[in-house]
Amino acid sequence: MVKKVIKMDTSGSGDFTEGTVGDVEEPHVLAVDDNLVDRKIVEKLLKNSSCKVTTAENGVRALEYLGLGDNNQSSNVNNKKVSKVNMIITDYCMPGMTGYELLKKIKESSVMKDVPVIIMSSENVPTRINKCLEEGAQMFMLKPLKYSDVKKLSCQLLQSSVGTPSKILV
Image (cartoon, rainbow, N blue to C red; front, side, top):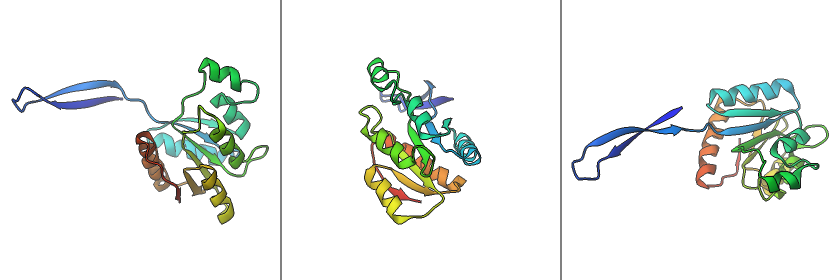
């Protein structure tokens, strides 16, 4: 995608010039869900909203992708091989490692702690929601995700890029 830029001539003539700025990167979202159907729905909705999407089927795979896996955390951080993502969206209920446990690991990482994490669940459990938000989740969303939810995620991506935090229950 090439972004057009219109600049006003500063010489005082009041003219505008048109130019381009190189490729504008799509926001990169890591989507984590053990359910293939839910993972594909999230992936399709995000891709339709001009996001680059990487998927993982569980928390351990997500940590490996992020360079935070147990086997390579120190070497990847030192070698700067940590994957660049703008947002992580994860299911809460997954075998092996819950979305809450994944959230905690991400927020403990000096490299990834500022990346917004969105937790999704099909269960509306207030104590779970509060626990996730208190641990640093940017949003808690109820499944199934809809296009209107993805529009809220797009706003979250924009807010996170300018450093305005928000904690929202959708």
